[in-house]
Structure formats: structure tokens, C-alpha cells
Image 1 (tube, helix red, strand yellow):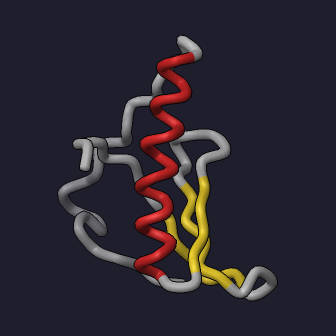
Image 2 (cartoon, helix red, strand yellow):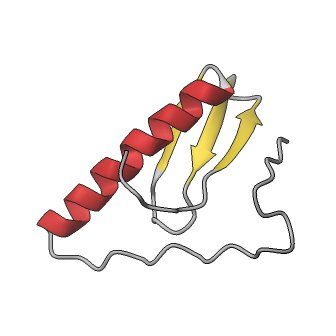
Length: 79
């Protein structure tokens, strides 16, 4: 897996009956899956495709946010 560090927010969508994974730093980059793990795996794949497409189109690639070493670093929050 490539070494990128984009935030992935995963939550349960009742209307979709699926876990949704959104990547806030990459506009329009989202995925879903029937399980938390499946949504995460799908998001990782979609991130790769998003970055490849941006490179091919000559678009700027957003820099991943720096995580704080104090608040919430390394924790997983589920909604």
C-alpha cells in the first residue's frame, strides 16, 4: 500500500444500509461497503484511483493533514 496519510471518516448510513468512507481532503472521494473493514478497503482503493487520475489530468494533489500528537491521534471513532 502506498504511503499516503489522508483522513478517512467512516460512518454507518441508515438510508444506504452500508458503511460510508469519506476522504475530506480529496473532493468527491468516497466509498462504501457492507462492513467497516470493507468500506475502509474500498476507500483505500478509491484514494489510489483518485490520486492516479489527478496526476494524469495534471491536477494538484492535496497535502494530507498533519495529525495532532495530542488529541485523538491513533484513535478510531465510530458513529
